[in-house]
Length: 232
Ligand SMILES: Nc1ncnc2c1ncn2[C@@H]1O[C@H](COP(=O)(O)OP(=O)(O)O)[C@@H](O)[C@H]1O
Ligand SMILES: [Mg+2]
Figure 1: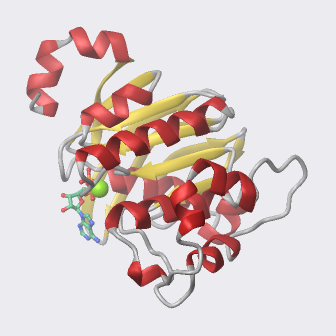
Figure 2: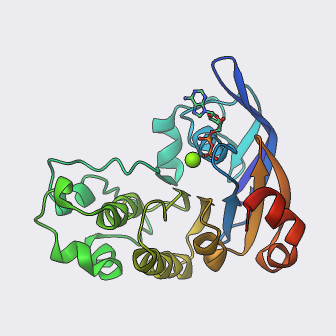
């Protein structure tokens, strides 16, 4: 197992948001965390990456406890986070945005040329400034930049958010290629189509806790869960 989240309770101030949430991810697996807006998906990712520290519970990454470590110590362990608000640098070029995240490690698979072959559009735009990009291009750039850190576990927060259907299709294909290279992923989505197309397993959460887990096949057949928590 690469990630084991056990019974975490996370708060914003006095607001109790995650209630004993647990989930596991095996190495090489793509797992999605589904749920309506406000269910607690982003808070789960923030808890893992150390941006909002759980008050109790445990989060093991390759057997090491993450709770208590600051984000700048967690990311270099091999966890990449693609936030939902795509924090690219508006005043840097596309190429600079990508290179800024470069992390030289042993066995690194991602470099500029591999990132460009995955996202040819970014190569075409390499001298454009970050603020000249469309939403879809910004999302690609955010993923490209995170890949340059050569993460073993990639956390994606709503990668399809606000993108046109054709762009989502392209994103699905690109994430599929990342999966083929063996990168483990946790994809948070309320866009069930994008997430389930790529994932091996799904967790469904509501009101800060996991309500269902199963394979994508099992979820597809479970009309009750889909109706109750996903509105599909
Ligand atoms: N900074 C914050 N302060 C207080 N409450 C927050 C904050 N961010 C999110 N919340 C609340 O936490 C709950 C879970 O939010 P979030 O994790 O963003 O859900 P999701 O990503 O599934 O839409 C929601 O009720 C939301 O209003
Ligand atoms: Mg969210």
